[in-house]
Image 1 (cartoon, rainbow, N blue to C red):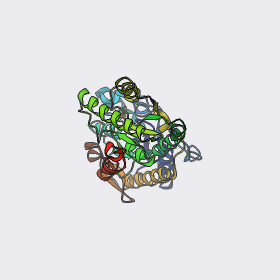
Image 2: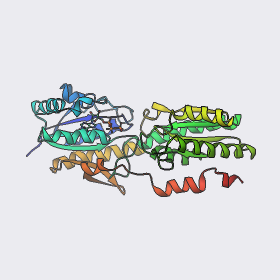
Image 3: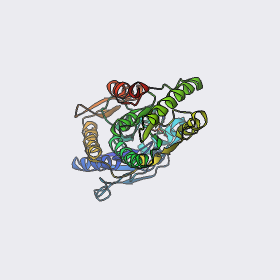
Image 4: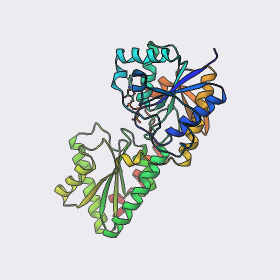
Length: 341
Ligand code: ATP
């Protein structure tokens, strides 16, 4: 079947490089004489039939821009049969043969949920700063997010050094440690606290134990006249986050530290070269896979080559942080009591 019209949308948390992926898909689709309909605000655009035909002009001068020109959003209605039926009805009304979604694993679950209501091809492109999708070495947005966090922590390091202060910096990543571990290593953080070295099934007793070890190590570092001390902590890990941890260190061990939550600055900004290039490779790859008749796949990069994996595989398991990275930080690089004595 010749494909004449396809739909694209961005869904879930926005990631730098989503615009580069949109541009690549539109340019590639037009090269193959295929029309592209962009749906606004994630799956909401499908349910509400809020769309626009994307022209070359719409995607010129966007490769360097953060965010997404199509907007992104969460869309709880996609988890209901009524929402799925409405989404499918829009796709049929708009005569869409294939739908490409740039997003994270939740967005891919939404894409798969559509299959009971709609017969078109579905393809996912991994766009999330969390880098937690299985089957691709990197996701669009991850490299920019870690560079942004590194830049911010380098600045924090300057003031921490000047005032001989302890900082607890909370970084994003949802429930994955790719951002905390990579950022921690790149900033020579004295400590990284993440899911990989502090499992979430840890109880408040686990937190107390970790708090006591941390307090001991910080005191030793102070005794050794270590002038600054940076702890990088994953969001969604410690009860109450970095602010609570700072308060607990103050109350239990009289340690003065400053909590800093990097928050959404990690999502914004111009994508770095690596994300622009990855987004372009995956965007073109998605159009070519679609023309080849592929469906229910995620376009991925493995060992620098564009490939694809089944969407079910991509969402079935979270990509873990490299064990050697975790071990190097934990056993060699972190400032432990052992290293200080
Ligand atoms: P990120 O983790 O980077 O924020 P994500 O794509 O994983 O990206 P989610 O909020 O998990 O973000 O999912 C985005 C959207 O995908 C949801 O708002 C919803 O519209 C849709 N979605 C998620 N899970 C499902 C599901 N099981 N069934 C149908 N739709 C879903």
